[in-house]
Every structure is written in C-alpha cells, then in structure tokens.
Length: 49
Image: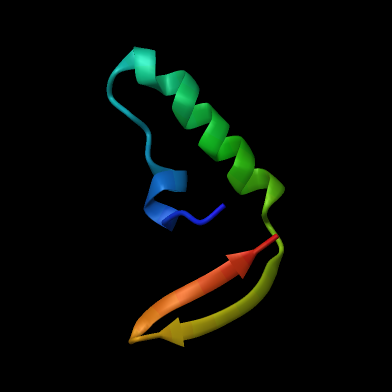
C-alpha cells in the first residue's frame, strides 16, 4: 500500500469516520520499520514495512 504520511496522522472531526482512521493508525503501527529513505523529484520518500 502507498499512502501519504498525512493520511496516517489524520484524525477526522466526524465520529462516523473515526473507525476508518483507526485502521490507518493501526497500519502505521505495523509499518514502523523504515526500509529506505530517498528523495524523488525533490520530495522526501520513506518506504516502511
């Protein structure tokens, strides 16, 4: 899966969307080991697994 770090850190203001946000937060916890960090077209990219 590829996603922006902002998605993993987002907390939605609507309670009905909160359950979806918990899924992303759980994925962030599972993927806490950085495999590689690089710059792609001037943007910082971190691949975690």
